[in-house]
Image 1 (cartoon, chains in turn cyan, brown):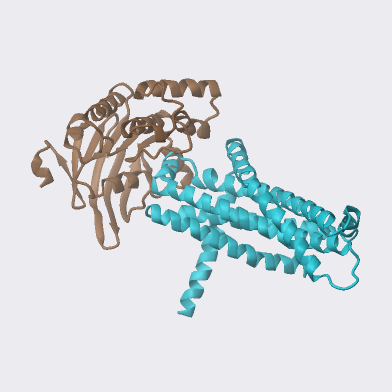
Image 2 (cartoon, one colour):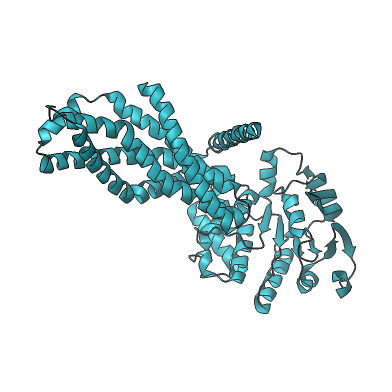
Length: 251
Length: 228
């Protein structure tokens, strides 16, 4: 049984990686694809932005409250900016944004492509000599690759502004004190390490959505299952890759 | 010319196509008749390479669809229009965009000329004024007409129709039967129609084949006994 499970896992990884490879390493024909890429950037970026604003607002608030709770003794006040800043840049911003985009976009990609599969729209593309991977997967993968880092930067900025405002108005920590901790202990590696994660996450999110969409066989029930699997797979892989990238960049 | 020779296809233990052979000559419209579930769609999809057959040969204009590389198969598909049973229109695109898609993807035609071409196709299929509607706003018959329009976009040599009149009211059925005939007579489209509808088969077929229990047989006339 164990060997069977191992085989399935490796088989899945091979299949999943093969799908990503097949979706990216095809003739791009940018002139025919760029509009679809822009549509995806808009759909993923603008479509997810309200959700990201809400999430990042509360990320900023909660991380501030939790940090203050853990700061005991005669600690300098600027330590709050330093601690929250690093938490948001390294971990909370990239991971929470990726999980939100995964929940919203991977499921929607799987459902959309899965529906196209069961209604023969993907067959129609093939019969029209249009590569469905270039037409459906590539724009979504590139769109997520571009939109996710932008959403992450916005998310981090909002979380830090909200955190600073909360500290100023409710914790008697001035903006300058907060800013001192944030800027003085800022490492470029924190920002770019976090953004490097988002680039890896973007491949996982879009690929999971498209992969499970293409795999659908059956009807409405299978489309729903594909959407669920896409989100679950993307979420787990985000957490696993978060650890691996952390080891490489910060380990 | 399309040549199907000794085609076998089975799904698990169920044999769907057993030694199926036939030919479609230039400017000929053949009908493959048969009850539902006999493998007519499998046969049609096998010819364009959407389904892989187990054994046999399928050639279109001398090109083997099974052994040729993907690039050549894709080039050949530009010469084939395929009308799916459920129309398979892209939900997120208007009728205009559906019809224009193959032209946009495969040619460098200027936008103005694409508009003209789509307008011409809409006139042929009788969907004038429907260009900006989405598939969800169309009736089943109109979807079928739009799908025929999309199949015509690249002015293909061949058109394959999968159950083109199934589930339609008599008036729409007549309209589509007439359109299929016109496309053959006036636009010299060679075609294959798979259907279970006797009236459609009689009305459009130059040659009629019966597909039943996996085997195919050429009919000289259609009788009720063929449905037995």
